[in-house]
Length: 255
Image 1 (cartoon, rainbow, N blue to C red):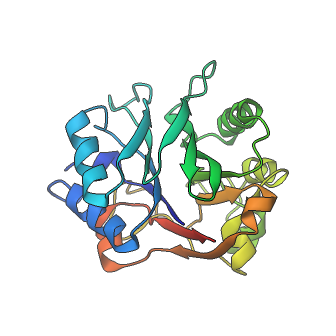
Image 2: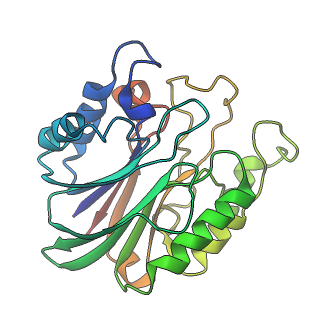
């Protein structure tokens, strides 16, 4: 079973990199042949035609979406889950106003029920991210087989060597509390399978001209028992992926 997490930068619209990038995004995903896709910045997916186009191109007929609040730029940064298998109990975490959005669903896979959470945490504040992830974790309950994946906008303490000398840098705070909170109960799948997972942002596509320092801010976390089933974890760093979005997608295979 293949799972992909992908922040697709404003739903692939034409504000960055020229015309619409949606076909590029679909092509990147098609190369992975995923069974479940968690999308962040699925802007425009409230338009059923756009969501159907993407799901049809991937052969993933089951979809769910959480609508993002109106952002400062007027956009709405949704999250979505696309699946080959039926989705149950879609949940958008009521009681918390997210800067973007978070979505949980139970996926009825051939090997059993899997809880999948696609999330996009606050872009600028570690304190806000802590509040958001705390609400998500408190709300999710104790499902034994769970994968939480998405754009956490947060740094991992296990990558600390990568950020040596950057304390006080204007581009981002070198803080690790959000990922520390996650690793209390979940396993960082990329860290489990790699000594130093590669950065995921920014790719070759320039969207925010102030962001030039490579960092790992996209993650796949799993409950300990389910993490043991992970057989490979790859950051897709192809020429096409570097043109399709400012984030690189993550691909994890589970047996």
